[in-house]
Image 1 (cartoon, rainbow over the protein chains, first blue to last red):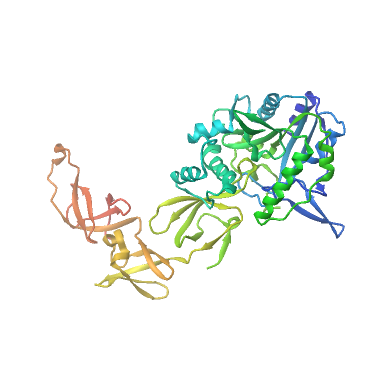
Image 2: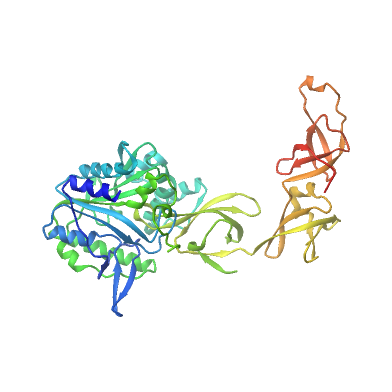
Length: 300
Length: 192
């Protein structure tokens, strides 16, 4: 399948790159914890959670459309679909529309799961359809009540800072498992607070993120953006994420100034990251990520 | 009792949540939309058997429940309760009648039962799934009664349980009963 993936990109004139895994600064996200390495007895480096920062610097420097197939690393993530070291296929396309990027991502996924159709649903529509809630008009108390009605007891409360976590709990427990049962399901236009590295836009009077995720058989496979290229806005999001990290009792992460500098020169592009191992799980019809890698985290 | 973090959760582990004893039925690590990760844990209450789904922040700690499961042999009953003995230690305990619940009707001398001890108190007694017992009281079955459509009749077992048995079974016969449902399974022979 690695060969099939390379062929896919060759046909589309997307060039392979190989950015380093050990980075000096970090991907600053409140919910992604990085694995560190101590190099030369003194330097702390981070194992990348995605080749995104390196790839964007290359794009800003004038590269073609590029892809990277590599192992990425995430701390504190272990389950039947999560392992601290896993493989990602990530690529960036200049001057492609958001819709075209979605279509190409689905074509990529079809290499593994066969010729299945895809349909697009907005985040808001998904909530409307599966929980009958209009999230633009639903309070945190109502979100808690919904979970309660499904006998799900949560550690979260109705305070404002818990809203995204409440939405995520509902998404994770009640919506995601039902997505993509008849074909690929693409969820689009996430709340602006969950934009991370994507541009935002106004949809039906609400600010939303130009972000999409692809699901099949209840499993999340890809995360794509119309990439943000405003370094001021990005810095603001990084600072906010670091603040959230501190509130959660986590450590602050160093902001990548070289990345921010490059960001203002980033051409208009869309990017996507796809979980290669999960695609292999679907291809081989297995339920545990350990079954598609040579040595599991515990076995190695 | 010691604390465990969500990374150590696995089915069969007993936790105390809000001062109640539960056993983990399943544990799923969930990370939706790259947001905050949580563990979705299905818990079964050890006394009521009711299941709930509870989310835990990934990495959160929970307390292990002070629960012990043991097997003890029923000796006899008196006004205080039912007396059980542990085969290895010869330790005897008296479980008050009110803690026996439905199991009281399945108590048979010399049979072994699963006992759940929570915080040092025996709180639940489970009978074996199948028990062979004698029918001590039932109406005689009339040959040819199946014409009226009746196939079962009420009966009382030696342990005091009220069960439904086929009409061809007579008083004094030994039958196998499913203690989960009180249903007749088959005839049984008279050996322990």
